[in-house]
Image 1 (cartoon, rainbow, N blue to C red):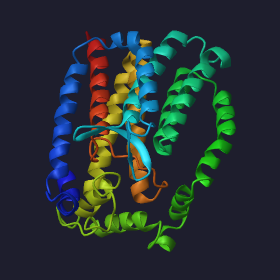
Image 2 (cartoon, helix red, strand yellow):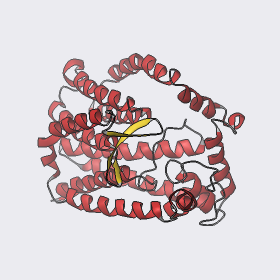
Image 3 (spheres, rainbow, N blue to C red):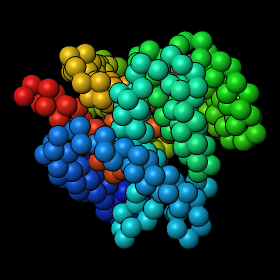
Length: 341
């Protein structure tokens, strides 16, 4: 699907229709190698580096904002340029924060209901990192990280009233982050009335719906999408699900949904049977992270959510996301393997 959705664009922009699929295969190889490495040690050793990992992420998120160090692209400064490759520290941040949250909850599981000892410290750390990611600007990933942390904390026993108070206090800031940025307001308007803005800000969402609707039950055929011919922007990244729907039809999209459902189900089964608190919270957090990203991406493609700019895990083009999602699954398998020993 990477090749099918990006070939025409890559030929026009890069002069090579296999440009993106070649890079994606390279990222896949790197991801598999790092995943095998993540399977070679006892996952419980991660607890000793939970805080240093957070410090490294904190430094990276600051450095990426500095002109000349972080790479700017379409007004966003989210990447480090390393030779021919780019690295997005916010993807690393999601996994590092999960390790830290799991370690914290394992140490403080008896105090999680206490606001000052169990709730406030984690929320403070989460808030600092979310603010740095918002500064890039990347509101989608910051909201995703906040949602993951809060869901894991709730599962660990955090009081719903504490979460509710946090939501109420954060709501004005979230609204300001949207209304103070014109293009975010336009995205909301496009989400509410996509067909009234088909030639403007709603163009991308409208084209996504056209792609999905054109596919019918079995699709127009692999490689035969019309919307990828410069109609649907980001066809190989954020909106690859729409191309799947157009080329492989409802059957293709249901297959993708079924695969994610199976992955989440099996991940949840692993998390449920883990007796080690650290492993339990880490496994649960990984399942939530992958599941939320899939739900949001698919929701955006079908018009259920405003455009967020989050890739579809394991399917969309994107090196950093692919590598760290593969590492996350490897850690999930690592936790299951150690539990069975």
